[in-house]
Amino acid sequence: MASESSFDVVSKVDRQEVDNALNQAAKEIAQRFDFRGTGASIRWLGELGIEMEASAEDRVNAVLDVFKEKLVKRKVSLKALDAGEPRASGTVYKITATLQDGLDQDQVKKITKAIRDDAPKGVRTQVQGDEVRVSSKSKNDLQAVMAMLREQDFDFAVQFTNYR
Image (tube, rainbow, N blue to C red):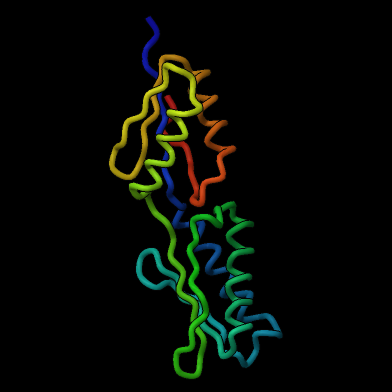
């Protein structure tokens, strides 16, 4: 009899790729003429936080745009980045952004409901912390579930790991 096949649905970002994008953005900000004299900067704020600052609100938004552009070039989903609104902090404006790492309970519910509603009959889901394991006897069913989840317009990034 055929054995069970499975894969995990996760929402994680490659920290190294984000770090590379941040370093590239910082380098571009330091070199571009339109950022001269604005005190524009971007840096890590803890493990999953990023802080951008500049002397004007439009310049700090431009720093965010440069960072987003670098993330896209490094194939990091912008859905994993949660950037706040610019806020005044003394004489500078700051934007604090966080990276999503793992699925919360509401996101897990959305994924399992989508699979329950649209997936073939023999597909089962199991919640394992901040990821969802999807299993079936048929690999074709699993590939159909992957395609279906890619087509869903979730407000968070999803990746598939441990396909076996």
